[in-house]
Image 1 (cartoon, rainbow, N blue to C red):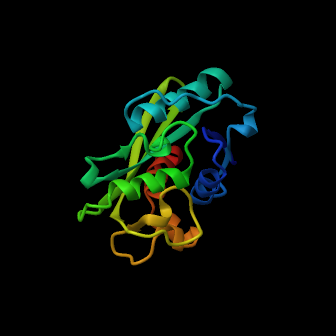
Image 2 (image 1 turned 120 degrees about the vertical axis):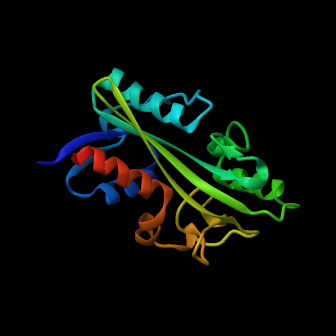
Length: 192
């Protein structure tokens, strides 16, 4: 029997990635599928806090078991920035191009390009919240490369690879990404 669960996102890219990783045993619904049109505020100052806020919101307002993620790009030379503010790094009314442009500007004079993507997933079942995370280490390059992916993918090269996330097809990226690693941990919890 297929288990129905909500992933608290309106991001079609994320939803597609998660559905591919979780597979046929789960019917993963997005916020649009349950009629949630609200913009759930991410007011916490940690990835963990934001993920749990979103998952609890869906459980409390719509009644579904739910999981939510928050992902940050943490750059060593920038003391972990943009981190929890990755999606709005360039400010209100942000878009990915502006966020990447600001990151590149802030790294112009830095030789240390070490970075990591970290995804935290909060699963809320009943009143219980469980947190898992996934990390992939890599580096930020000086140019945008690739047309796949989204966000910072065109400038992030994972350790052990010579191409960016945006140069990988979804199958390759899903096999090594931070979201894939966190989702694998989530899947273990869901099936146990």
